[in-house]
Structure formats: structure tokens, C-alpha cells
Image 1 (cartoon, rainbow, N blue to C red):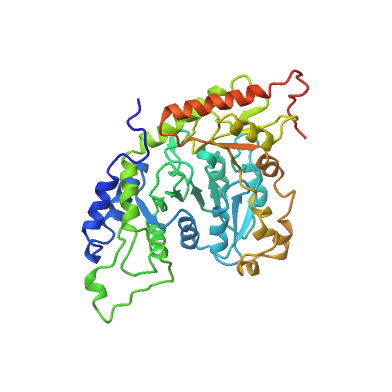
Image 2 (cartoon, rainbow, N blue to C red):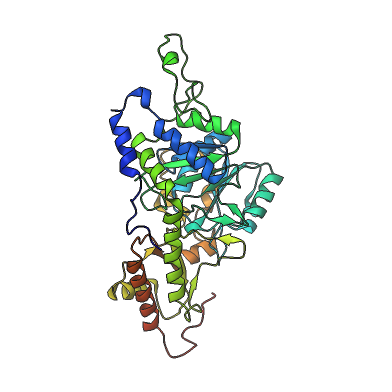
Length: 412
């Protein structure tokens, strides 16, 4: 049963009024952020949480805190939004692109294993579309080489992997509160970890390297900063702190996380049901035993020789569909890489690595990118979602050609 026909229905306004009533006095600073951090850590079963201005700053801070430096390499999936790669470049490191599984679309352990070198300082996994990668073999491989794993879970809240919450597996995990995500406050992010020393370093990267902050303390004391002899900055850091207004909204959203996630899962089931009978050429993302998908989007790949991506999208829209998102271009084929326009970071990338950024580097990801359809699941009115699922079935039916030869799956 639905509790709401909208996304914002909890304590958002109440908490915002609390912040506004404080008139942003410094004595009240970070109250909402601290409440959000404590509540988020408890929900995900970790010791520490640190809020951030967005879900890219989270990963940059994690890399800096881990000790990634210029010339180091960080393995990332080729098929994902480019923010994962941006974080690596912001740390002056080199992104090394791993290929993906053709059925789950998640980073491939086989590809990772071929890319590890003595320069590899971290692996970033991405729970793409709300589904966890196969984490056990990745963690086992990473531990063999003492390489930390950062979970990029911007698209995955309350997803599970073999009974464990996604986000509780790696050295730390990043979540995003950007407007399209399961929980949102417009923009924002959070990192969680069980490692006290790592959490302390993350906080200092987040808060200008301040001496007076730590894993659970997000602001300096007034007594300290009123002392002319006080040394504030122990290390270089960034001003990546989340605003109290955003923290207030994210805290209220967290209180309704089960409904907000479950609504997307219910919508995804509608799409899954609507394609029955057409799975031979419109293939949904594989969810294997032991995995629980949180469905930031519902995704399928087109494997029909007679139907192009644009033809299918246009037919769906013409029948009343809301539109369909395409997958992002693989990172290394974006102009920033093909032109090496990396704002000076190209100086830290070896000629050998630069030469790899071309077609053929990750063939599975390259092929999938042009086949994938990402359908919205953020329908808060279930009737609207049912209509979209019906339109998807009508779209599929309209391409149901006579000959089985025409619907052969292209495996080239």
C-alpha cells in the first residue's frame, strides 16, 4: 500500500525550519549534519559516516585519505557515469578502465585481475543501476595485493549482496543525494566506513584539514578558534562540507528510506512483467541468486537485428512513453580523454596509459553502451508507472516481427 503519491512527504519542512530558526549561528552549525551522519551510520550498520557536498567529492576524499598520489593507478569500471573517473583525476591519479559483465553490466573480476600492477592503489566498484557487483572475489583479489576497495553506491540504497547491505563490504562506501537518487536533498553525499583512522583522515580532507575535527566531530570548538596561538590546519583539505539545509532534507528522506526504495522496486517489477515473451531480444539486467536490486533505474539491452536504439526510443515516446535514458559513453571515449583535456592532470598519466584510451579497450562495455535502455523508476504515483509499463509492452508488441530469423540475437 502506498503511503504517499509524492517524493517529499516527511519531516523535510520541519527540519528545514529548525535550521532556519537558528539563523545559521555558528553555535548551531553542523547539528543537522551530525544527526544525519549518526542516523545513516546506524541504518547501514557502520561505525562512521561523513557528509559531503556531493557524491563525487566523497570519492575524491576517500582516495586522498587512502593515500593515492600523482602517478598512482585506480581501477574503475568503463561503464558508469564519469564522476567515478573524475574523482580519480581530481586525486591526480590515473584511471584504469576495467571491462564489465555482459549480463549484469557490473565491473568484471576477470578484467580487474589483468589490470593490477605495482601502481594500483585502489579499486572503485560501482553498484550500477542499483545492483551490487560480485564483491566477494573482488575483495579477495584486492586483499591479496593489499589494495583498498571503495564502493561507489550512488545508485544503490538498501541493495544487498549475499545478505549484506551494499556499502558494508569495502574499505569505505560512497552514496549520493543528487536529485535523481533514491534519497535526495538536491545535492549531497556521504561516506561510511568502520575504519577509525580512515574516517579521521576523510573528515580532515572534507573539512580543510582542521585539527579540531575527527571521525565523529565535524566542527572545531569555539574555545580553540578564539585562541590566537591555535594552529588550525594539520594537512591540506577541501571545503567539502554539506550544508545544514541539505542535511536537514536528507535526514528526513532517510527516515522514509524503505518506502522510497521499495517504491522503485515495485515500479521495476512492473517493467519486468511487461516484457514477458520478449526477453529473447529485449533482455533485462541479470540479477543473480544472492543479490537484491534497489533499482535506481530498470535497465534492459536491445538485441534485435531489425530495430535500432533510436527506432525503439522513438516508438516508445510516440505511444506516450516518458522517454528513455541511454547509457553514458564509456569514460575513455569522452572528448576529455580523446583530446587529453584534463586540466593538467594529463601530466600524471604515462604515455603507455594514454595510448590505451581508444576503441577496443573494453569491448563488452563498448558494445553494451549502445544497447542499453534505462527506464525511470521514480514514479511516486503507482498509476503513472503502470501506464508506462503498458506502453513498454505495446512498444515491444509493435516490433514483434514474423520470422524468428529477424529476432535472432546478435552475438557479433
